[in-house]
Image (tube, rainbow, N blue to C red; front, side, top):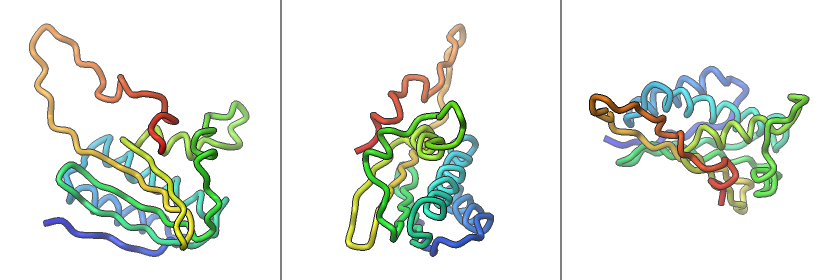
Length: 152
């Protein structure tokens, strides 16, 4: 059974992480994918506090192939340019969160609504791969394109 999780953004990040972990497990994510979901949402919510309107809503929905999480930031300050410019800053002071989010997600989109910035994170479950003898496994994400190529 699919269900939708909706919770207001709050400073209780531990509670939000716990809710997202249960939701992701329920919809078939595990291991690195599940950890990626939890970490990416944590980073997005932290950005709402540090750079946005400090309030909003998280909505997570399962589907046949994974989970979609929407983070609505009522501040509406996040732009596609921020996503495109996200890199690992050598000083470690800026940009790492958005870069990390894009690295962990299968797809990241951003749109502006009448309510603010809506960051949508897509996580796809992955079937277990059987590796024939004599062949080495490549990482599934090993062929991934640059994080900025996954933005819309």
